[in-house]
Image (cartoon, rainbow, N blue to C red; front, side):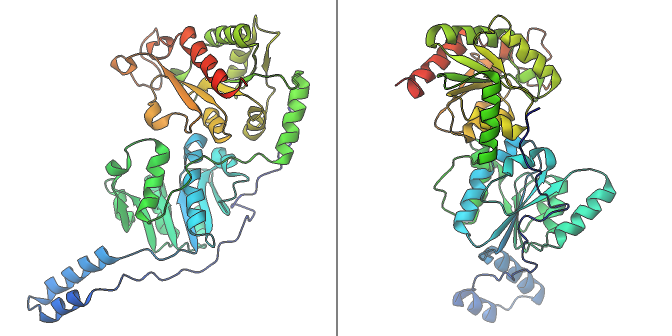
Length: 404
């Protein structure tokens, strides 16, 4: 295995950037003179005066400039990657603020080398003793502002534990009680997940100027990619196609045989060669199936970490694959990306960026079961995507982005 990555520092044992151990008091906006006069002249019972004053206080409450911000998003690395435009906008709006992020270990690599995150709080286990220790450590940082974009019961509790005076979250039943700034998830959910996360910033009055995903490839990772390309015997060939036949769910995966046919067609039409990425051992075997009969122009990348694979992906002229985390990494690298979509909605979960395209079977939602494991033996939502559809879309993108 080729591996050049240094161990990643985590909040559990090692410090990235210390978050200041203090908390700023947040005050309400000034109550106008007319409201003050109203209270002086209002002769109703004291009980209703108190209730009305509390309501006006809540309505006029504003978030002051935070000196420390906590983001909560514990999920897959594609979901975490979609929050990176939000992180960039926060850092631009509050350049002096320290930004912490609660993330699961399997997604933490997404944020490595990210210039907008100062500290990672790595959440690793579900057992109660571990959670108690995690919450105690988190509470020691006393953040000014927390933004919970997943709003699970666990992250809602973490929002409270962070001691943030301002806690932003969405209006999920019961869990909304943990936040003092509650946003409408229905108003937010009008487009892509990236837009959903950015909606929280509109509440803060932050101007969004850049919505690009963020992924930084380090010099060490580039050196690793050089070694992998040399091992594969690939040097300066263009166009180079990256194939990502992986997928979190079987229902999202297109067949290896069809990928092999697409590679043959692109090699015939554009003299393209392909590198195939994989994660599990089963996916490695599927990658070898794609290579069968295409050995002269198809290469299987050796076992790598996610970040090493991304550095190799950065050499590709076009990335083609199923709906998966690595596909979204390719969009963060500003690569032309062609995604194959079945049960997932590309409008909300498709590759993000102006160089991204998707292929989907016609009228797929009329017959897709939308289950993790497809209930239909012919797997129509993915199998109705033809080789011709994919090869034609890929050729168009090569013409647009690669051919001089």
